[in-house]
Image: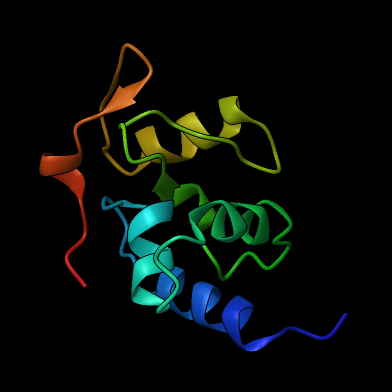
Length: 100
């Protein structure tokens, strides 16, 4: 499947998020110059099969985990392994947010 420019932008942005940090679908869409396309960004990441794109490091703007193509439990385990604390199914954005 051929990737379009927006997909490539999303993947390239997410690749920049280091271990132990997160971003949101909304921030990623905004940085890709399509601020209202945060759901599209989520859909793109939901279909990602490339392990070099750490899409589990992208969460919802309200701090909730959001989805993951390998399951939310695995997403939580991957985040916890990187030292991100999940409390009441939420992550403290101020503490872990990556500044691009």
